Length: 119
Image (cartoon, rainbow, N blue to C red):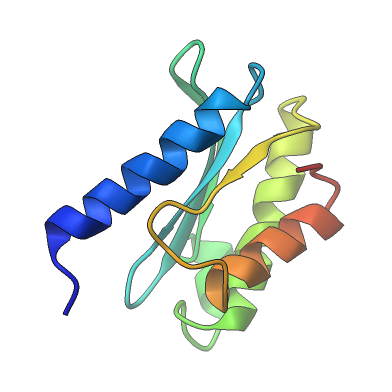
């Protein structure tokens, strides 16, 4: 089992490297739990969340079988791209946190990219 310290350290390392190349762009941050997946577009310069989406929202919850699969992550990716575009965000950088770029995290990123967000 992976310790909480190593997960926190990995997430910080990924975020630190991404902020070095961000050039003021907002970041698309992903949080994945065992039952749901969440995404936020965050403006780190001003410290504001510009857009957010998750599998806990009523319109998504009704049409998804579960919030913990690739199909759910794809829907959240489409929704976050739509909301980010509405907020005026075209380019983001993808913050995978401590998660591997595989499975649900990759599905969310691919759906957001197809929805019009540029990484």
